[in-house]
Structure formats: structure tokens, C-alpha cells
Image (cartoon, rainbow, N blue to C red; front, side, top):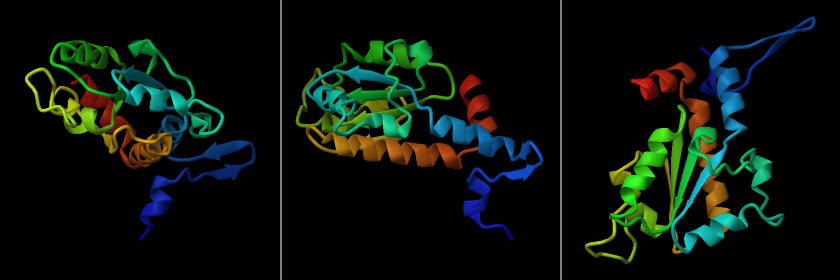
Length: 171
């Protein structure tokens, strides 16, 4: 029996000048190391989101330095901050415009659960309008917490079958 680590890894065999591997392993390796975030900075968490691009935290180490402000060019939405009911349709529209496969990170207490705002105007968690893959706790969370969430998202991408995600998104 093959261990699960061997199945998930980019396992290659070199024969001359030809590299042989499983298609899922190669596709997931590419997707894992080239996540293009769509920053949805809606409140104070957006400042911490901007900080991860700084040289001190350097999100480029994880292949996610290409912040795209166009949903058609991104595959990971980072919702940072309070989502109001007035803003919810726009967040959903941007999510729907993203190409498949796509992922969502809810950054901060407000994006995850509504935070301290228990009011008529605040959505109690962005997971009510878009499916969330990783939650980041904190108010506001430190940039290191967002990097940890990115690592968790990359581990999730490595584990899922590449073809399943494509067919699920297009259905």
C-alpha cells in the first residue's frame, strides 16, 4: 500500500529527458504555488492584509504576491473586514465572476462571524453568501495569521482532486 504522503506529493520519475507524474499531482502543485488573491478589504483588517505584501512578511514566498483587483484574474478571494448587507450582493457578484477553481479566506472576526457588530446592518459571517475555505481569527488578525491561513489553503489545494474541483465549479 502506498502512503498518503506519496500520493499527494509531486512524485516524479525521470527517464532520460522525460518527467513522468500523475496529472492531479502536477496540477495541484501548480495551483498550490500560484494562488492569485483578490483582496476584498472592507474594514480595518484590510490594513493587515496590505502588510503581508511588505518585505517583513513577504507573501511572495508562498507564490501569492500577485494581488489581482480583477475577479477574472484571481482564484482566491480574501474577505478582510465587516461585510454589511448593503455590500453582500457585490461580494457575491465578484465571487461569481471569479474563474474556477476558486477559494475564499475569511479574514478577521467580522468576516468570520460578524464580530462585535450584532446589528441589523451587519452580515453575521461571509459564509452566508460565499463558501469559505479557511477562517482567520482575530480583531484584526496579524499578518502572520493570514500567512498561516494561506499555508492551510495550500495544503487543502494539494489534497483535493484537480478534476473534481473543475467539474464542481462549472455545474
